[in-house]
Image (cartoon, rainbow, N blue to C red; front, side, top):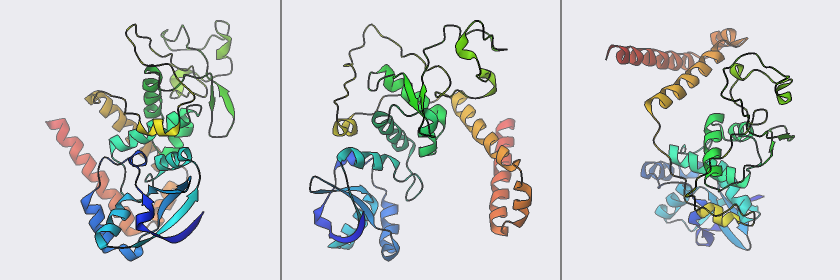
Length: 292
């Protein structure tokens, strides 16, 4: 890996490595104004070709400015490694990914690393584990990834993915380890969210009219990158409220963590002011919704 000045015309913009739905004109304009302060783009040298992996808006700014050269971080690897890198780019910098772009990134990561646990991928991509699990099920049901029998956790260890529990719809309560030895030593299902490194992996739905081809491990990264996104229905209002509730409760739990109160007192006035303003706006909006 090295940073160097390379000719703009030498960089190849492969659509398969661009997760953006479109370029954002305002972002390009901002990058033009801040050109001298921008970090280098990232390119992968794959079989002698320089493929742009991160920095499509910066590249567009360079073209608009009439630049001939651009600073780039050059990495050497395979197309698969470039695609893997792309799926993780813009998670913590640059223009945030849109909802559809983030979903596309999750789909690619699952296709490339279907053996990783939902928790592992969720932590890597800063998304909810439930979202990763939902997309995994959809990819399995459409035969785009295998269900698998094991999962690799964030600790690098491999855990079994247990078959579906025939009694999963029984009322929740105390675990009877004599009925199912798999439950021995596990936490009760109603005390923690579903975790695919511990809980049973949902079985894929079988359709008599399914026409998708069986999973083929020989499919290369290029095919993965060009695979169309799976079609999903828009979330219901109940699903949206459920997601927002979980996120808000997570924020509340942060404020209740040990040492938070003392740290809050020492925080800058601007940071505390922004936090309080957001809380007040949320409370006011909740009151409006309640009265509507």
